[in-house]
Image: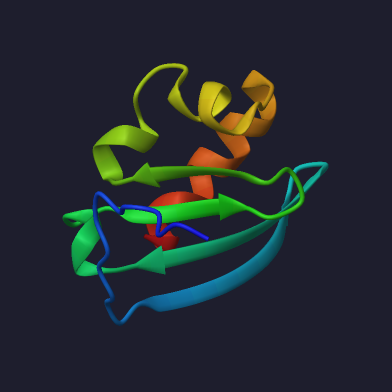
Amino acid sequence: MAERPLLEDITQNTSTRFVSFTAGSHRFELALMKAEYFNNQTMVINLPKNRQALLDHEKINENGHLEHMFQLSAVEAEELRNYLPYLL
């Protein structure tokens, strides 16, 4: 079998935090991964929906960003937006 060329192959130590919480009537299960590779952002993974985004304090407050990245309603996104600053 032929070798497959890689464009990039980097190994780094990461820190991953798993959090579950309810906000309003919604439950969130997230993994938050930090690594130098992410340039001061945190990879936030919504585990049940299998959606992820690189976030920082500015990105979480961008209008419509959480709704789009995590496929959330406006209400769900606002509930998540209230928790994320304390988690990042």
